[in-house]
Length: 115
Length: 115
Image 1 (cartoon, rainbow over the protein chains, first blue to last red):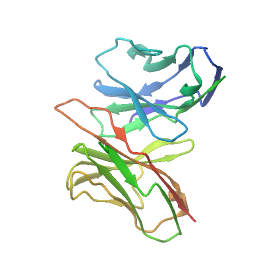
Image 2 (cartoon, chains in turn cyan, green; image 1 turned 60 degrees about the horizontal axis):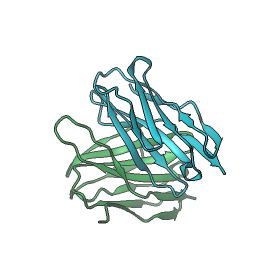
Image 3 (tube, rainbow over the protein chains, first blue to last red; image 1 turned 90 degrees about the vertical axis):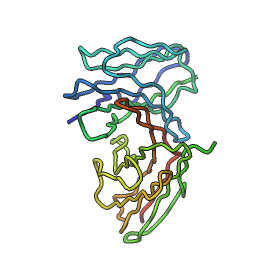
Image 4 (tube, rainbow over the protein chains, first blue to last red; image 1 turned 30 degrees about the vertical axis):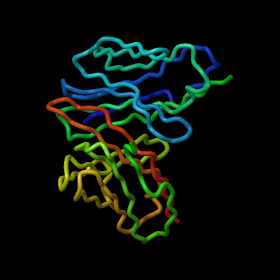
């Protein structure tokens, strides 16, 4: 079985603060993929990043960065200098190659950035 | 470039009625998926399809029926709607090449209310 845990249900920060969203996953497979999606108030789901289990390099894309650590089964997401437009629900998701082809989502973290 | 569309965007129906939610993608992606999103549960997979005429159950398939006669369409039918099926439904698609699992792209969602 695979599982994704996003322990932070809601986070509120003031604009320009940095914020880290936590994601912990469980899987028995050695080959798997991790994803982050953003769901703004308008409701659509926007793909942000994909990582596979063989690539532990951290990644930075503008104000976004991701820290993948297999040793702790974590794939955390940091927004630097947050902006009001970053307010959204963020989902972490896991796909394991050994399981049925199911993408397992965490329950999401509601991020509110206050002006 | 329409991408992936869902119709209707909003639907109100009554208990016991049959309802069909439509999903159409223009990318010729082989895989298509149906999820439901409920508060506290994130997204849960209902059914998925690897290709035309190939479908399989996800995490929460009971009460739903799918078909896929054409690659671009993946309708979801609630044969006899129940109040517990009130939810937001998302359709998604992805392309799979070799052993790589690629990200899923989501439609805008259908908000279904069963009275």
